[in-house]
Length: 352
Image: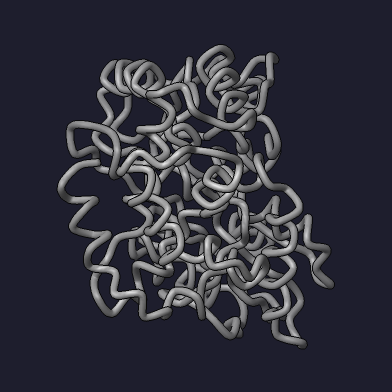
């Protein structure tokens, strides 16, 4: 364990603030499922403690949502510690089946979903007319390419009007591997090589996981913006009409709390309809339950966390809107009483 992680562990004064806000502890109830419990487990691992299923469950049920870090009065960084301990264990060959599967699929097939079909098929016929070079490049992501191809195509149809291109051989951004302890350098190198060829100075993505990986984990200080940031600056050019709707908005953890993108999505929503906030929003937004490999490794736990989040939907809204395909996927799994929309879906309604 590095010195930074050890200092973070020692900062934890076991006050229990994290127990009151951790979405996993809220469902599981065991001390080892809270951030302070995980910090103790991480310290034990650093001291040579045997790694059994209990240790794996403690470390790998963290969604890396960062709410504990946001609220920690001592300034500890549990997410960084947990991700680094996961990585150290993977280096020793100690990992769960879910971790092995994510790594194998992402490295072998270019996506953690195990898909073998053409990644860029969502482009359709317009793929023939894509510019080779541009100032902006749209990074579609794995879920966008394989699970929400129509939405991804519609997103790009809007973006290409502003001179945006795509990567011809895009692969996974590496976020699922980074969060679960594996090395994504092969994927990162392939994407960086293509970005360089396009000559783009800015990368645009609609996925919170892709956003945080591209912005914080890629070398070279890339200029990365979320599609909501890009379009919020260009609303006057979209010819929008006002909708007779009221919606609520779920802040994706890795877009909002972890990277501070709160205002752009709300600016878009308020430009086309009414917004009623969820009980916990912005920095205090609760996790959808899918991140950190939890949806893959602990699907039932992930579902329970989703249901908890859905309890906060205001009673009189027409839609639940979010800005991340992973959040959308897991919130839909929870069975909400209203339809879950991507923010691009909402924007398109206002574009006629």
